[in-house]
Amino acid sequence: MLARLFVIFGGLFVLVLCAALVVPYFVDWTGYRADFEREASAILGRKVTVKGDATARLLPFPSVTFSNVEVAGGPGGQPAMTMETFSMDAELAPFLRGELLIFDMRLVHPKATIDVAGDGTVDWAIRPSTPFDPGQIAIEKLTVTEGQIELRHAAGGRSHFISEINSTVSAKSLAGPWRMDGSLRFDGLRTEVSASTGRTEADGQMRVRLKADPDAYPLIIETDGNAGMVRGAAVYSGQFKVSASDKNGADRSSAELRGTDAEPVKVSAGKPDPGFRLNGKFALDHQKLGVDEFRFETGPLDNPYTADGKASVDLGLKPHFSIEANGAQVQFDEAVGASAGAGLTLDQRIAAFEQTLQHMPKPTIPGTVEVRLPAVVAGDTTVRDVRLSADPAEGGWSVKSLAATLPGRATLEADGMLNVEDHFGFTGSLLLAVGQPSGFAAWLSKDVDDAIR
Image: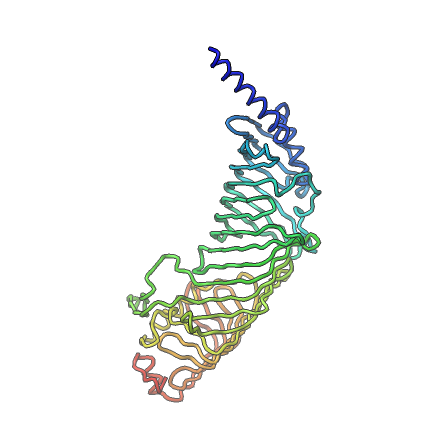
């Protein structure tokens, strides 16, 4: 009986001790809804209101759940952010050290509106300082379910929608490092995304690494650089890398093409190439994405074919992109599904060219592409003196000028519309002057000598 009393009173003492140490830092249990609204409003710099249910418990660990949460500050008096459910579980022990460890936080159906002003100022970046030390708060796991963000870009006069955000986030402290893994849709394009950061530096900069794997395109985009706020405007600059990705995990040592008779033809590609690689330096702000230099590589990793260039994307009211590339020689053996020594018929070459164009990203804004290459190696073919100037158009590309030298001393010049969607084909002017008919005919019929080529 005495032992039982010790257990009862000992347990009560521990409970009172925990309440005395934990509750003042965590929540006022007599009015935790109002306390949450007040503290959250102070942190965000916007009025936070809990319009739904609110529940809380102390044991076995401090936990709170709120439903129908609204954050004020949106357009026309509308909320800037809403959440169907916000819940959080924390550990007791860190409170004794004056720290807060959130081991499980859950946001269900959060929806936010972020305004980027004409000068680049991000409204959510402007908020008062808070009494909380970001280094004393850690998040072991934050789960976002079906989130949505409307990004209103005043400089471009348009809005972008990030929807179906499903991710898991963690942070050793609110000052970093952070890590995120998940998926989302950016303007409808579903993409697997992962991100990691360093700690916030004294100058406000933070190292950020991003990796994006869009479902619609066989490529992976990676960036590594410094992000920060300059007078309230977000900036991000560093290195980027784009590499080919086999979405289906197919055997790249062979490829199946279809000729004009629609019959499948499987062509050996020999040892699979690592695919194309694109890397360079970038700088991004609210007005422009600039790539002052990039290198495009194909072929073996230890001895690649390269082309150098520059690119830019204007993000203003009249968005526009430009790409310029110059190089010594590039190789596209994997694009035509054949090794350098393999021969293909004309219809197989056209089918391979069509497949390559269909897998290329389709620009959604106006722009120009300027390419000048001394040689392009595609399977068994070397095309020389390639010069291309083209703009994206509905259904394909508007070719302003194309010039190249084909096997058999054949000169090709063209301008017109290249359709790559419903019905692959070219409409426009085309000039083909063949200096060595026998060599050109042999190339078309898969029988071509290196000297002729």
